[in-house]
Length: 275
Image 1 (cartoon, one colour):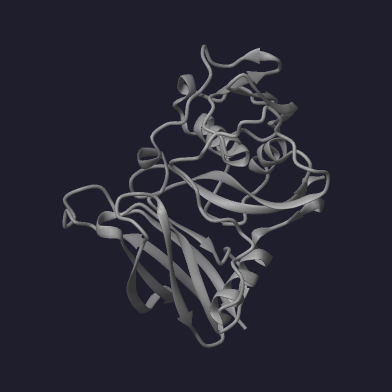
Image 2: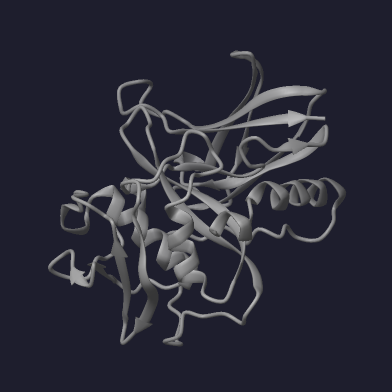
């Protein structure tokens, strides 16, 4: 069973937080990559047997601007990262706000293959899920996940029970329209962290400004902001926190240059317990 093989990212991000606070080695979770993933020249999607790695898995979450894709890193031991990332996508997310866009019972029918510039994914149990010709969020959730595992931008030929599910292979959609523009990668939702820890993530926001809040029992205790590496492009951000024992919600949110005239600002939350 997948769950028995998996270390959820909570353990990895706790190590990342401690390392960041102590000036130690880079986090075990790989750096965030989203809008420009270099293609992998090999046609094989397999990695050496027993390789321990973190794979990006995408989920759907509701926002004030409608559903968007959010990413988690799952640490797994795998000889086939692409196939196992797809399997992870059908498992419950660590974050309680995330869900899969696929119906219960959907699973991978055959291992993922990658050849001749096309990634092939064969599912079963998908029922009557609306793929929107490849543009709907469930289809894009799959595309972002399997391309992220392979570090490839090749289109995805989606089969259901061996038959094509869309007329043409599905290409990755516009990340700025599909993904949340602010995303916490660490710590994981529900993680237990030391009093001094670092929040890391990825954002594509106006003037590279990422706002943050710390809440307890619904009340805002602290606010601040940090800068992403680049403005209006998916890039990394981080900021340190030092909190007393207790349970908190850490929230990041984009700036709203429209002053409330545009769509609702996108956010991402993590509930953490400081020991």
